[in-house]
Length: 112
Length: 114
Image 1 (cartoon, helix red, strand yellow):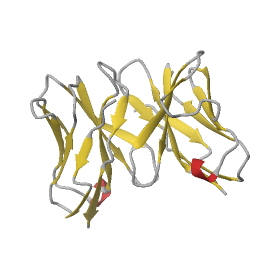
Image 2 (tube, helix red, strand yellow; image 1 turned 90 degrees about the horizontal axis):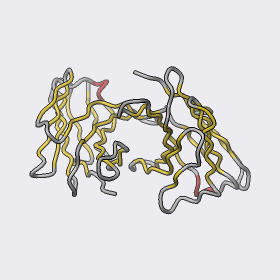
Image 3 (tube, one colour; image 1 turned 180 degrees about the horizontal axis):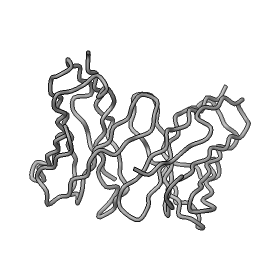
Image 4 (cartoon, chains in turn yellow, brown; image 1 turned 90 degrees about the vertical axis):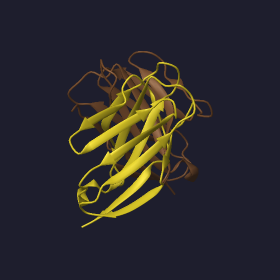
């Protein structure tokens, strides 16, 4: 199985700034997902982007996918203290599977 | 979104005892449920996949006799950690998958084995 790797591992910003997290993966995928996890809690699905999509928006979230570079980015605009959490990218366990395998995540801290 | 609950949210048990964790899909039928474990500041590692009414499929390196999974109905799956040891202390998270691709995660169960 392949695993996405997020970068940076930790990010600390001020409220109102934008936060960008990157994810790189190794083999071809048909979809990539981003999740959020508040400390000591379960995961919340943020967005899924398919391999034939280059960009997707959801509220203050913008996700891009570059299949030629095998990378994705998650941009949170106008961040808020409540955005403080860990963010994970997830790639399919195998082939066309939708079972996600997770990277180690980016820990985002937004200071009020 | 759909809701998945876990019970208990945290448990402390003595080494050698068994612990059962429940995972319920509250407002949808989860044809497939997944169990993950997560160590501090680490990724979620998939332990097993279970489909209602059939045996769970375990990931490589996960002992099926130690981590017993039962998916008796479309809304309930249980994970029993048998003869728990301190190294089993971890955060266990379940998720349920409905008809679509999306998985809905439970809030997790913190297991501490003393």
